[in-house]
Image 1 (tube, helix red, strand yellow):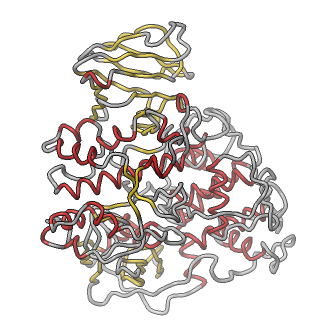
Image 2 (image 1 turned 180 degrees about the vertical axis):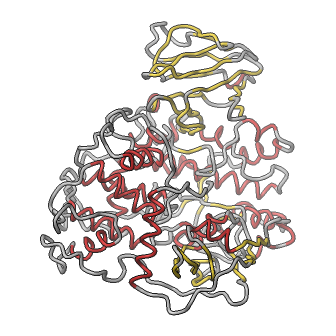
Image 3 (image 1 turned 60 degrees about the horizontal axis):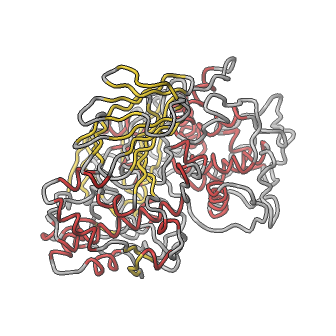
Length: 640
């Protein structure tokens, strides 16, 4: 996952205003020193540092440890078992010959491809051409699948249309046993296993690969194939486990992928992304690289084996997180990934192996120097006058960084999580120390909504009531303004256009890089202020909302509580926080999607909601303004 600095826009101004307001509430007690001095950051490791350390596994394997010993060292209290035994012989993971849908590319309007060593059958829906396949892509011909607009798509050969237009639902399939492969030109990827599935979204389409579990693992490009056998086998088991677990999380895709959760269809029409968002799936290139037969042998030697723990939520299959290397001690998933509670099997463990000479780890130690001006640009300040690590995790990795500087010529201090600061500066891990220049210094402020703010003086809000302090906080920080004349209208509805503004303002404060984007295909935004249109398009680009259809946002519609739960948790996830698991006491969640139920349960765990009673959430009731204020304030406290 990459992190980029967002373009200047109104949302950044709002976030900086919030920071300034915090300082006005809790003034700095020391004067800031201006300047552009150099900060030296010494670190170790690469990645989030949770679960298996890949370089640590390399060293352990080189010292004679087995794959099982490696995995049981990095994952606490786990067992290795055949997936068929864990899930049962009737599980769809076991019985479906190709249960995984891998998201190769999203929101495309063109896909160029050609085949090698054979042909592929082509087919698209609703083109009136009869049974599939309706065209054949012969070896080395230049083909394209192109969106024509209005939901129509067509195949092209050498830029010439072939057959009739149809919908953007299509298939590219070939005989996996024949040695044929399909090369996707713009992705620079080649696939010999599985079936390419193209599915419509908006004015374009997603591209996915439907594939068997073992065939998927053959294409995982996470470690060099030249590594010791036990390290390769440990990686194969971890990758298989992660893939199976994610498939269980998102559910059986069903025939044609149509059983996937609607939200997941909108995002990628997949259970796993082919990138480091999930795992680095590179297809045929892994098998054909130098030493690739070693990797194939490791996959075959461990076929079907997954890692289990009795507390793991998906039928005992764990979330097998791994990263390149830790800084000498792995993190639990709360410290390393932002989960609300660490999983029993993802505890931090000493990892001297990441730095052992046997690991030959090029990132066992690293160093960067950065100017105060560069830090200021990365965190949204004018100048930086002090940066310090102000809290560490039990592993020694950085939990919090405090930054002092200036904004609009006035002294100011802000905090960032160790992970957020790492992302802002593009560093390899969040295990580091910061050496500041002489004379610099920081002051630690309080955080938004943690302490009472001045009363907004709203005549229709009880400042001491359940929602009163949260409403005051939202008004004070400009996230939710009063409606008019000193009134908040606490029991009034939230309209979808308002929701977009409130969520974007919240997202900016908790560190989400909100993108500047153009139209996302909604045709019903005419007459709205441009900043509202921008917010709606940004939410679509972030995957927080997909609208009520590919072309309709319904800006004046209201929002049921179940839908707001989804939006809130997607904002939470966009800030690189992991939605915690858990259960809820609510008995009225029937008929909701799995993602919606998980969202509600996650918000309960985060203490964002207690429901409308001890046993009801009232998912189909519209969110009121006072409820929205409390949702946002509580999420802000959880995420800052």
